[in-house]
Image 1: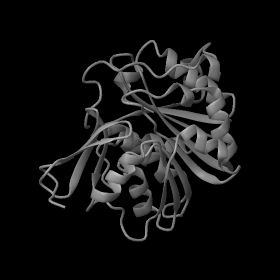
Image 2 (image 1 turned 135 degrees about the vertical axis):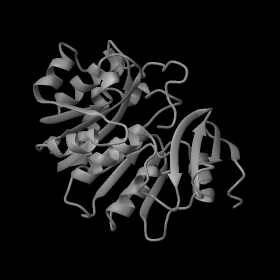
Image 3 (image 1 turned 60 degrees about the vertical axis):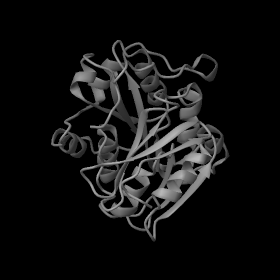
Length: 281
């Protein structure tokens, strides 16, 4: 591979481009139809460039004791940034990656191969369809990070989808969901309400300006049937280069307010982001 040359290919769901980072020798940005999707440094798989990816990484660090292997399901593949992170930080983990765009999986496998020893199985399938066929109690962690362009698809934004995820998780498992919204947060609050009916514990991680309604942005939902180490999570996210806040307990219930879970028949995709809302950093 000539590392200095961008790669562009029409895949199943759009035009994917791999662009080299001039500041990092073997790092690449993946975009699909111009929307940033993933960033990978082949020499440094623990480097997470995007804000939301860093927050997902913080959660993955605290869901179990350091280094313990986990069975992880990733809904949404991109350039396999988080599977590489888990393989590096929790060697021996078994991971399944579900990505609807098979052509994208082929592109990533060809140009950004996984490191030797990474036990990662990729599946070219719709995330909801794959999840519904997955065995119950089979995953320690599920990471739902599926965007069609820059929007979470409607069939992955309902209480029915949440119920399937809850079924596949083990009793001590943890669910991570990457969402996006802006004030007045009708989409985000309905999502949180749906997960709150299924999981005893939940937390929300987001940049303070997003939570105050100042801008559109990502928010990471964390849900489990067991207590979450929100103190450790808050320390990590507050000390990050892109500081974030962790809302849980009474403050999260207040944020949800009177929002109701959304069933399949009423589900909508996440809002269209304003121009320039998503980018690196």
